Length: 261
Image (cartoon, rainbow, N blue to C red; front, side, top):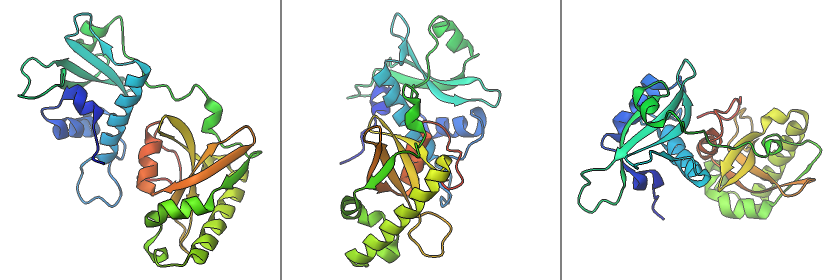
């Protein structure tokens, strides 16, 4: 299924890549927005972040409009080096291209002290997204059991496994996966910070590193675990590290020694 951008349905971006580059390199506090294996800077993590931040804000009713509906704005959740909030600012699309149904045109990423923000939204400054209505979900509870669905993980995620395991028989895959999950299950019980929260499909989940390559200190995949009830976590899927980082960055920049861009 082709990707549908809700942000692009909301607004026309005349120079999207240029605006993204300015936001990343000149306005927002320094952060790595490209994957470590990228040869050129295209900021895919930032683009993903803005798309899904917009979707979450829309769901929460936090896209703010002026009374005459000529301007719109949302809080990106990013800040400048001086910790000023950064907003995406839009103007009514006055001369739309033929066939366009987008109501607004993107004008700029602006910090809170910018005159355009203060003049149009001084009494209604947009708020950031809210991921913290249940803060207990953000931290792994070592008293809970972790019960993975091994069959489902293998069946639905084989292509995400390291290449050297693509040709392995089911028994070998099972042994590698069970061993890796047992290892991380013990680690996270003694160090809850190993678990990194992510936001996906409207839910808070936790990510745990899976090391499937013998002798490698680096994880190959991220196991996705979620709270089934007060006593049990379950796991039915795993993600590539790129997928995991994108989902985790929606909440906050991951402060982890294993989940990197």
